[in-house]
Amino acid sequence: MATTDDSFNGMTEHCDDCDLDTLHEVSVQIRTESLKEENSQFSREPYRVSECQRCGNRTSQRMNNA
Ligand SMILES: [Zn+2]
Image (cartoon, rainbow, N blue to C red; front, side, top):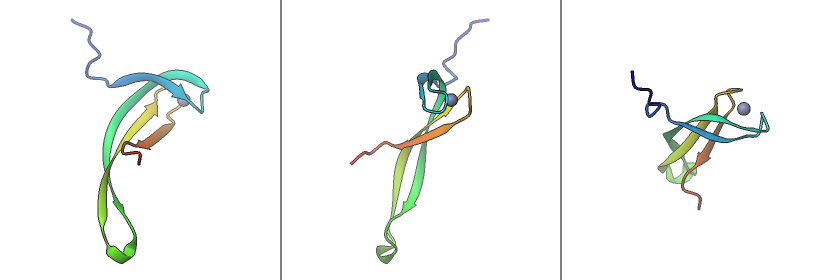
């Protein structure tokens, strides 16, 4: 059996909780954010979510950093 971990979107990143470089599962989520109520406009923002596989800490980061 071939061992590929292509299906697992894992990356080694720094975890603040662990204070270590740990394996993270990285995914992208589109979140709908409501902006100011007055114009009832919604924006769909992609967030990069990474979950530490050691402690389970999740961090999400907006991908469109203005
Ligand atoms: Zn961690």
